[in-house]
Length: 617
Image 1: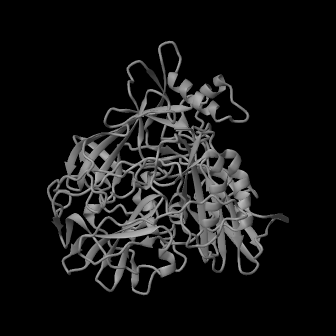
Image 2: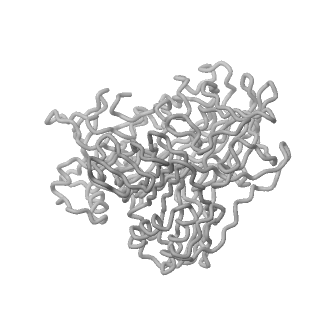
Image 3: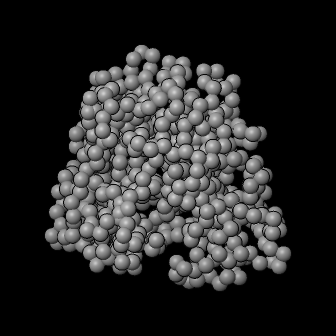
């Protein structure tokens, strides 16, 4: 791995699983691992995005019952219709999401369950997770009311402590592991990135509960494969880029090899860490024709799936990370598996379906010698580049780069992985999907304070000028001062560096009602009337042109992972919301999305954002 080429580095994902093993999947590689066992994986959808963000620190709500007694499927918060405009919408933190008179079909998450209980050293991993029906006060009560918490026991230690899985339902589901003695709770940092920020602190404003502690060192080898060796091919863990949700442990169904919603799932191999599956999805309007999206998913012991890629496992190359053969120059723009968009990488590979018609010409190489090539047919044309240019032009860029200049900039480069598959990477110079549109951040300190803010994203536009971050003088009124100029907020546009989670919940409304619902839901989530008015002024003109609109939201806990902010001094309250709008048919339905607000206490940061460039489906 080089400093410029993004391959596997679990340590680089703060709060994620440390890379403790450099072992193959053979049982002999780790002496206390069992023989291969089988458990199916979970399919996930990664979405691009464009955002204006508002920051909030709040935790999800909890579904409870008696420990060890199987319970009914945890019940999500029921939501009520919201159609009020900004002037009439309530801002009660306890308000919930709206539903629509126009239903939309749900997209379900398959249930993943292991086949046998497995004992490894001091740990026994359960065949089936056991729902926990009693409250677990991991965090202060106020922080367990934003979203939905559910808990399952997934294993036990030899000393009797339970190994529990916590699930947070916001936009999709995130998971974390903790130990449970019945009265004391220990969050395992190595497996809890979903609730930790980039500094390793819990994302909730009030921290942890009095009976909860954070273990920063414990790791379990069976959960931490950095590489797997299958059929002579080395697969490298790239989970820091994939953002796969946990298995739907309460869903009641099991995903097996087969086809579902355009994705083909095939068992590749059973390993000592679990089953490794191949998942392929044919290209659509989001990618050039002739490519297929391929991912490799490990179904492990803890119900949190992991992503792998065949070596050299390149899914992103930073600017300056390539040297072009003809000129000796380096690349001015990054290349990624998803090109430019709010969500830039997802840990999958875009594989060329049929490389035979193409002639490949070595064009550049990485510092470790991986050759990157261009591709053209015998007549010199490139249908892949032409298809990509059509996508770029459809986003109405200004100015529109002529096709000849576009083609000369090497918009697609290819390398061959250890499977023999030809993999495409796309320049971020030209967008393939909408970017993070007008993220806006408001700062409300309790007294005049100098505040520094940095964004974990590729910032391409900003006001004030971003540079290596903003350092501004902030007043309690929200007024900001930078080099003698005053601003009401911090603004940026750019691209995220991680994939966005599957969108499984939301509100569907007729298009004429969408603006009012946006206004009402933004207030429910915690925006002030002035903030909501600004939010609506930006997003109302960007509502998709479709008879029916699906509205969904990402909130603080999820955004802290996908678009991390580093703020000094650290705010007491952070409220972040991110709207995702999609044009849909009138006969579809989706599960209602629970929405809860955040009580502002002390120094507060608010951020709002959304997805640009969505299309009618």
